[in-house]
Image (cartoon, rainbow, N blue to C red; front, side, top):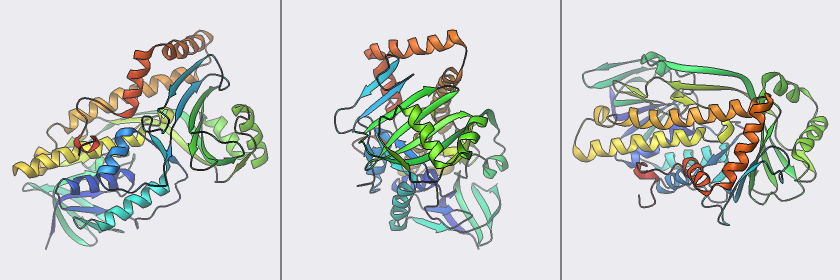
Length: 395
């Protein structure tokens, strides 16, 4: 006997949990599957949430109070914070227009709590998914807990997605031969809500404000340099970090283990096929330079929810109607942002003098142009004319 749902979602990371809540909010009966128990885990990273992502969580009733650090200023420089080669976005005072930082375990805990309250979502975790197939306007899933059926199957199982491969969706991949080192520091001087990214030899160093006198460090660069930085002791690492930061946060201590992540650009050749849709890292992985990876996945969730809502309200097939515009909509957004971050990362990492001068000049000229700065700010916020309903103020 099959257990039947409107939607089955495989993968209970940040994108999968959000997609489950968004689809349930649109009126769907959702099964959420994961191969392991759904817990916060040991992810040491933080995420920069755009204004539209913050609206999404607010509209879904996800309580992030006391966990958010508003971004009051954003600064990109080549050199010290007061360098003339800079691009500066100044907030409105409370950080509402520039988004906020949240540590991933805190965000996941809030999502898990909200999912547990939602009676339209049934959790199967841990569960083993053996296979799936499309049969008679349904997707049938074979699991170690019996058969399940859904009108729509959503793959949220990460950048190495098994479901993407089984669905026959290919992906284009570019490995940067680079990595990011992530850790958290405490410091004696306040950060004042400043998110600072400094272009350094071969990469970039991001200093992202967290609650209290704490900041997340994201150092991206060649794999060999990141491995060397990972291998030194804490005292030497702090000395190296302080030099690259011009000690603007005062005395520092490392308060979280250093973790490294390989960098790649990967975009699926399609975001859906048949009754299968991809969200989050299963659909795309981009360079972390602009801090937009999670926001892309959250827009996937909100866009799917729009299609699900239309299907339910009009009595149509969720597995067809929900995907009518999804592929084109998300492909356009993802490829444009993926190209932009790839271009910026390549220019940031170059050691060619003429390109380095062009990069510095570009920062200064963009900083002096209000129209350009406004366009970049809108792109980062996720605001557009066709923004998903759950990302609007009046949802």
